Each structure stands twice: as C-alpha cells, then as structure tokens.
Image (cartoon, rainbow, N blue to C red):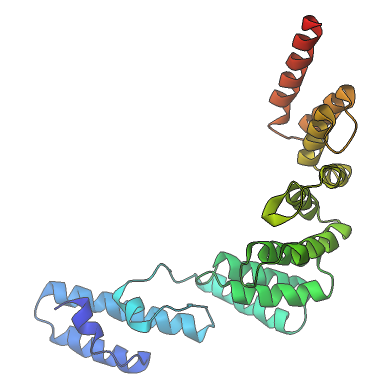
Length: 259
C-alpha cells in the first residue's frame, strides 16, 4: 500500500477522511501500512487545524498535503493565537497590526509566504501613513512581489516612507538612484539620500557619504571630510568602515609619496 493509493481514496473532506483512515489503520495487517496511515491521519488533522484557523496554504492541493508533499509545518498554538489576534486587530483598522499581518504573510510565519495578502495589509497601513508599510510596499512595487513592478511608483512610496523618517527607505533610494531597475542614474540624488540617512543616524549612510566625498560622486571631492565620515560610521558600529578607513589612508599616503 502506497501513499498515492491511499490518497486516491480520500474525499478531501477532513472529517470523512479521518474516519476512513482510522478504519483502514485498524484493519491494516502490516506495521508499515499502519505507520503510513497514522502519518497521513496526522496530516489530515494538521490540514484541518490550519484551515480552521485561517492559515494560508496557497495552492497546495489537499491530497499532496496529506501525502507529505508540502513544505510547511504546523505552527505552534501560540503562533496561531498571535496570528488570529493580529488579523482581528488589522481588520479593526489598527495600522500597526496591519503592518504586522503583512510581515507575517510575507515571511510565511503561519503558512506559505503570501505576497498578495501582504500587499493588501501593507496598502491599508500605508494609506494611513505607516512608515514601515510605505517602505515595504515600495519594495514590493520595485520587485513586483504581489503587484506589478513599477520603479517610479516605488520611488514615490519610498520617498513617502523616507519623509516619515524611515532610514531603510533613504538607503534604498540611494541605491535606486545609482541606476537600478531602469531608473536613470543621478549621483547627486545618491549622495543626497545617503546624507539624509547619515543625518538620521545610519552608520551605513555615513560610510557611503564618505565614499561619495572621497571620489567626488554627487558632491565635491573632499578627502578630509570623507575620512571624518567613515570614522563616524566606524564609531556607529559599521563593521566595514574600519577597513575602508585604512584603505583610504593608504591611498592618500601612496599618492602623496608619489607626488
């Protein structure tokens, strides 16, 4: 007896299939058949548990799930309870809960990743000015996750998030204006967004302000200022800044000697 043969007998109604598999297990003559039926019975119960609690299973077919052809494990009761409370609060209009529900859907915390659901909740939270939701929605728009890709609209969303203080949005905008996703490269905008991130306390922003100043990209060349910026990045905990500072110093020493 194989799992495929057993699956063909399923009605795809958990209550009926629990009764069917239980009867087959009691009548099974071999230990291997019993173990197989117990495993499938467990998965029918798991499927029922997930669907009853609104856990997204995407396009997974019932029979495939019961046969074990599924990349999902049942979340703990505590996680399911957290998920249900989050969804209830999100449906009641709580923007933070809507953002959390979106991230849970995106990461597949209680099921398969579901970008359609994530975008739905992000849009609701973004509509009332949630900075994190605006940022994540901008990333989804940029990459075409759960919505059609549109770099220009993504930039607008990310700018809205940045204007509300979201540093990740500032750093992403700096990367985009390097010429990503078909957006025309603009060195001045690259520098401007890295500087805004730096002023907001980003170590990564300070490091890149230093790189721009050192190379004269989007701002006049100022090696002394560049070194100050990279040193600030190091003080703020940027792991790459220490090595970069040494390389900049070495470059200046070698070129000074050459002169």
